[in-house]
Image (cartoon, protein in one colour):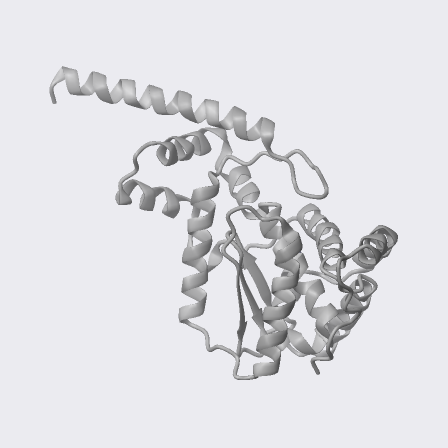
Length: 279
Ligand SMILES: [Zn+2]
């Protein structure tokens, strides 16, 4: 290989590394979570996070049947749109999908792709209960918990290289390599459980979101009670329960957050109370 080419490569790598470091310092210093204001270390570029979200969503949707219950489908769409209207999410292309699946599960991927499984609707009981689940999942995406978890896993060196790739003119192959390095498909943001801290933060953001969207936040602790009962009464524990334990601490934390959320609810542009009954 000609010496000149080698030098060019070395220079380019050094440039990418320094761009990565610059990007890292910018990301580290600028980012804080919405509504809770916690400083956050996120090295994964938003564009990459969004495209991972799109890919995972397409993957799940291609293997799932849409719900054939029009009133439930409308409730999911209506509740989702009301939460999205107060979420202040930059660059999100919202989509709300109800899947004909008895699993008790739900997720929101980066970029605003939300899927609810029919099996969780009995625990929701009404639209406000559905808003508890949807706003909690949307909160994970708004707070970029998936990207934060990936950043923690990646470590500074790997993340710097990823940022370098993303900031340069990537070829599909390098982009593909970068994505594969972090694991894609349904594993991303769906199967991997969040930390206890992320769960608590999503509860905190979620209860504020549902209140701003006009749903009575006092439904939140009630939902967790019903969900806990559904979990203990079922032979196979609900999918969502494996990543979202319904424990006493969770209920106590939500109750402590209720007075502030009720204030937000009182000043919401429209108030729907518990909304329509679903089951
Ligand atoms: Zn969660």
